[in-house]
Image 1: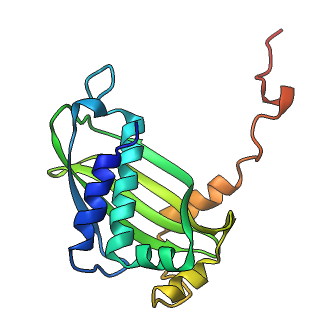
Image 2: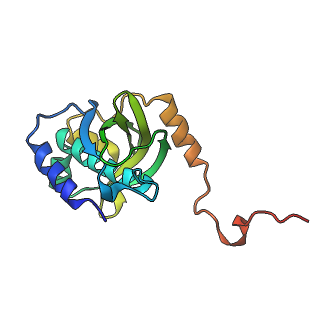
Image 3: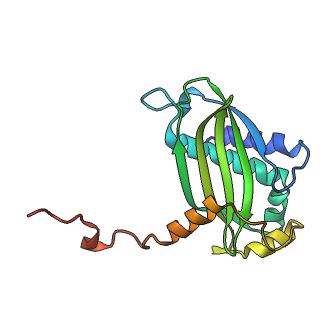
Length: 186
């Protein structure tokens, strides 16, 4: 189930904190609760992605994007992600969820997120996100201007552009009909 109580807490508490600059890192403390665990008694990989939502909501509030979204009647959507899992998070452990905006291109906003336990990065994600209006992507330059930013992004890191380029090579729609079946051996 979606963590609505955590979301409500984040939405309420983040509004009371000072604004962040658009490229500052947002920090959110979390504890691995029993309903976050999988059958191996560690935080479920799907729950990690869900908790990343909380970090993006919190960042959007602190940089002023949430108010712009409401005024413009825009929505947020995840259009792609790449996640690395490196260290277990077990029951009742505390982690710090770090979220930061890396920049944007003509269509998407790129966000980096990670869960840290002390100096250990437990997992890390790169997300390609979009701002939508009536089910269509809103030009990111319009979003940047609404936030008081220049329409052109600062340069994205090479690892982000390489990922976006590689992801653009994937066929869409995937696995059409029989062509998705692996070849059979003689």
